[in-house]
Image (cartoon, rainbow, N blue to C red):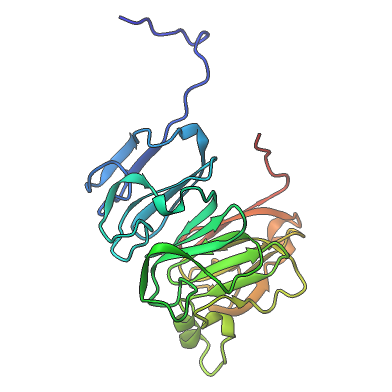
Length: 288
């Protein structure tokens, strides 16, 4: 029987991936569709220490490794896994159509996926019922990742909401597409003409950000946000839960969250949940 090392002898703990919670479509990657009440370790589909990003959508999950590989699992009825078919997948599986194409970031919407490659190109797959794939004249769904051609400039950040998506380019311009925010906007801003980017089915420049340079975009179910190189945070869309720090029920164009909300510190990072936002101020940590 092997002797267990003493605490003083033990080296750094090996990295591991765990998953738990709702699992109706196999989105936990554990090989079944039963909900899991406690964290359960995933099998080593990749080296856990080499995972760069983990994200999830309505019923699917995605992992990007340091080497740029994309692994996906879960709900796939609209082809949101980009595997060339529409069967649900119970284990994290490599997206083989992207082999040899290093992936930088992935964003999972409700039933679609947006993918950013290492050279700044944006791809999409899944449902296109609301124009969320950025391909206005394409099919209602796409089962293999396809390029969003109108985005010709290099992209550095992407995001996906319920039925809309965003991209920030290297020059700091923000684009949005998908009509997900339009219904809320029409209901909450009666008689007001909505800006084109809220109703576009292909990438449309977000107006109101002309005097700023975006470095990052995030999206919730029905809202969007953009972080600038000056540490300012702009938000727009639904404010049903107060997530936009505004008195308005809906912001049709970007509005800056005032600096006093962050104790006059610059925002250095931002994350979005389905109906909330989290921001970090001060120095960012460094990753070796």
